[in-house]
Image (cartoon, rainbow, N blue to C red; front, side):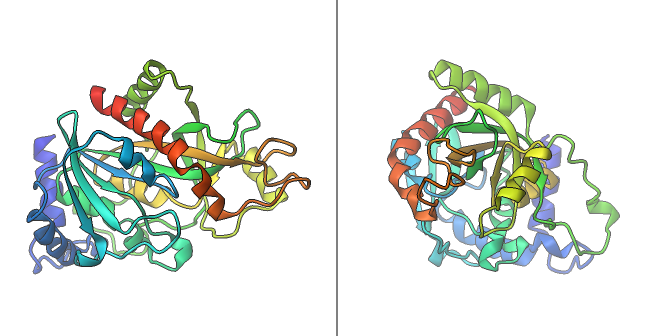
Length: 305
């Protein structure tokens, strides 16, 4: 594993003159970003955490030590998130002796960003030799047994964005992008999450996440189609980052907060004609509630990881 991590590091931060390397690794940008961050955080990390829409309040309930907050606007080649529910800083800290870099916000394809801008934090984590990633999102619950504010462990995903961060570059045998994605979410991390939830008295769901580009929400016909594809939840992020993390051999745990349900007549449903239609800003109403739950899950996972 150490040998491989050094290999990944050399890919990410290799010499400018190695022009045969894939352009999607953006080595020069990453070198600049890492040089800046090395002044503030350790050069080796254990975990990265990406927080989805209105999930950043969990930071307040994590007992982090040695906290360092950095404004994204000051970091070379990083773009400041602009969608409500996504913070404009990154945070380093230690928890259970694990060195963690937290991204309390993200970029999305629906904002018009390129997919390589969306996955830039993942490449950055590889530059810091991070072995593990906890990636979260807010999603609509498609499974009829799901309820609003459930948390779902992602066991697999459907890439309905019709794009991926390895697409469109010339093949290079050294960095083979014909990547096996049959198990994109790490089994060990998933088992740790399940055990941690039980010990914390939480009932986590498990399911398949469908990633779409957005920003529009689904029609009833699209919801029916997604259910036929066996999707349990649908959202507008996560899939590109998970693909890049797998390419860079970073173990992934995915968690979805079921922000709303889509079954007729269910509480919080956005397809019930008698209910008010769902709005993105509605997510702010549950920031503290879901933040406490997510922090409890993450802290218990880090105890065992």
